[in-house]
Structures are given as C-alpha cells and as structure tokens.
Image 1 (cartoon, each protein chain N blue to C red):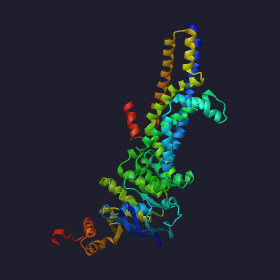
Image 2: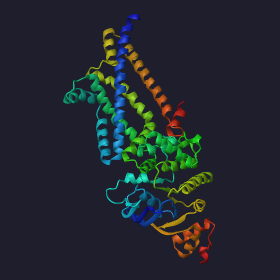
Image 3: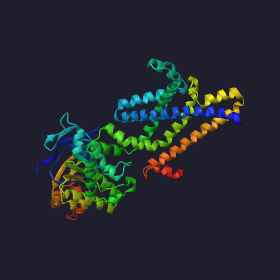
Image 4: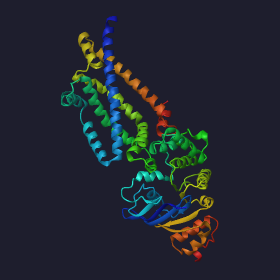
Length: 261
Length: 225
C-alpha cells in the first residue's frame, strides 16, 4: 500500500520549549501504528500538527502524496481528511450522540441530509453504540460510550486516517475495553490509524507496529515482539527505561532491575 | 366605579407599546449581540472593537440614547423622527451592549476542548463559534438575558420623553384628569408587575424547554421547581 500520511522532520516550539524536534512518522494505507512515549515527549503536539490544528514551525507533512505544509494549502480541507479523536472526547454537549456524529457530514462536508444520516448511522454502528443511546446527550452517557461517539464523529467524516490521542486513558476498565474493541474493529476494516496510547492491552490487541517518542522525536519503531530487544539496544536513557517498562507491561520483556546494572 | 373603566382601558391600551418596545428591542439586541459574539470569538480585532463599543454604550444613560436617536440619529439617516422607532432602536442598542457582555461571560463556561474539536473537524473559527459556542452560551445565559427583558419593560417607559403614549404616559394623563395620582400610579405599577411576572414565567418555560439533560442549565431548573 502506498503512504497515506507522512511527516518529515517536524519542529514545533512553544516559546523556548521545543515540543517537536525533528519528528518523522509515516502511515501506509490501512496500516495501524501505536505511538507511545513519556509524558511531555510531544505525542499530542505531533497529532495536532498532523491534523494542522497546530502549524509546525519547520518540516513537511504529506497527505496522499501532496505536501500540506506548503503555503496556500487550506488547513480546513486537511483537517477533514485527517481526523483527530481527543483524549477527553470533547463531544458537543448541547447535541445528542446522533447529532454529534451528523454534525461533520452536515455542516463541514455539507452532504444532503439523507446521505449524512446514513453515514452517521453506519459510523455509530461501527463503534458498537447501542441504538437506544443515539438520542441521549453526552452527559447521559458513560465515559466509554462518549468516547465511542467521538470516534464515530471522526469516522463519519470518512477521513484518510484517524489519529487517536490516548483514547482509553481516562476510562474505567469496562469503558476502556469497549473503546479498544471499537478501535480494533475499525483497524480490521482497514481504517488507517495512528493510536497514541500507553494502554498495553490495546497495543497488544492492535498487534501493530509500535513507535516510541522521546524529546520531540520518534526515536524507534518496531514490531511488538521486537520491543524488548529494541529496549535493550536503546541503552540506559529515559527512552530505554520507558521502552523496558512498556515491554514489561506487555508481558514480553526480560526485566532487568535498574539497580542491578 | 364604572366611569373609571374607560381610563383603565386607556392605560391598558398603552401597555402594548411597552410590550412591543421591550420585545422588539430584546430580540433585535439579542441578534446583534449574538453576531458580535461570533465575530469577536473569531477575530481579535473584532473582539476589541466590540468591547469598546459595548463599553461606550453602557456608559450612556438610556434617556440620552433615546433622545439622541430621536433628534439626531433618525434625521441624520433621513428617516422620519418616529417616537416608537427611536425608543425601540435606542433600547435595542443599549441591550445589545449588555447582552454581548452576558454572552461573553457565558461563553467562557463552554469547554475549550469542544471548540478545538470543532476546528479539528474542519470548521472555520466563525462556524465553530456559531454552531458550538453560541448555542451553549445562550443556554447558560438565559436567566441573565431574561433579566434584560425585564429591565427593558421598565426602561420602555422612558419613551414618554419623546412622546410614546405608553402605559406610564397615559397614567400621568389620567391622574391629571381625575386626581388620585397615587392610586393611578399604584395601578400602573401593578400592571407592569404583572407583565414582568409573565416574562419570568416565559423565562422558566424556555429554560426548561432548552435545557440539555445533565448540564449546568438543567441543574438550575431542577432547583427552581
């Protein structure tokens, strides 16, 4: 499959702080990648840059072969193609679950109502939200249900890729399981996805390639089973310790106590 | 007693001017305030302009606004100096200046993340302000907005200065004709009170109708019942 989304050498500064310092990543069509990394390593900033919610200060992003960081490209068009699911979901609280999902097709894509409704129903079914909940407001839904509506809202845009920002981290175990099931289901259907997560169960279930971020760069990528070896090879820094901790949580690492080294 | 009825009817007929002025100024003011909010949320320059205009208008006594509209603004625009129009327009501008402040304060209660989510979907800042922020801040602001309507009902009696024959102006005429000015004033007061009470009922009804289950506004309604 050809590359759908590619970022090369992204730099993003907030004042004197460099949140991204040459981050590069690429996703092929239908590919699912997990992205992990210590807090503050730039994961959320990378996702927001890929969606052009933030403008990178340097570096290039290519979407379906054309550079979208070039001057004169309409960021709004890019945002429609690169969907972003936030950690908190951020559903529109004055709209029902169904209206939230309908909103993108109707107001952003300006599709005819019947077509938008069909898309919304399809998206809500894809994330496994029970039909009886479609008419409820966000405040009446559980965390897991809300997050699945947020995923459906992204899906109804029929994006080229969906970026997830720690979609399960604020949820109770049941909610996390429901959301993970929805993400895995979409991944199986061939939705190109980049999942920022520390949820070991989700990573294992996705069976995806894992990339690790550190200090604003995507420092290493590998298959799940390669992670322990990569962690060994990464030496002794913050990244290596993070990789070992993650591999340990995945239950596949030879854990070497730090004190024994 | 029966010979007082025509006087009462005369005053009651004047009340329609108060209702008309208050209702149209309120609606026009809300439309202007909503537009100003959407503009100021999507452009910092517009935000500064709106804030300055609102501050200027809020500092002027309503009577001066009405008089200036009647004697200066309407003639300058080439319109006939119509008392009803002048009073309604002046109070619409005044309430718009207050309502935009109310809506702005309520907008800060809308989660920032929801605005980001709207932008991330591909909406422009203006569309996000219109479809996501405005509907929620209006709901949050309903009680304060209806206070404005209630104030307008009372401010509408200032129309008397440019010759609107509203309930209060007619009450003055009736007390001059019959004496008993205190009694007539009390009667007019009761009338306006009844109108204010109707506004309050309307506000509660609307609040209940528009409340989103499980949100801030809905909680307030529960307490009110």
